[in-house]
Length: 146
Image (cartoon, rainbow, N blue to C red; front, side, top):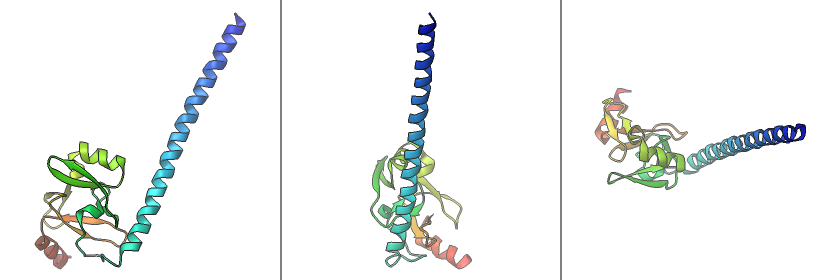
């Protein structure tokens, strides 16, 4: 009887350790992927600054609409309700498909919501941050006001 209890206890400990290792590896992989994505984003932005300066309108397909960041290269097209949004990874694709807030920005000039596919997208910072305006006119008014 003791042998069965000891073996059951050993198996339980092994199972807990295995689950812990899998969970740790999963977190480590996610962290590594995230770090790689951040490094890649920074390189892309630096490489493409010759084409787009702060204040330039940038094409929708070069923007990760979840991270609100100019990426400098075509992103993953995500069709939702007849419109095409863009994301940089599977997580962003999921958010764009499932969360309306990921598909909507706030115009900094009018403070009104704007669909990111219909927005006038402007590079706001050299690090890649973008803003979504209802129109070019709103951007010009915002720039004059600032």
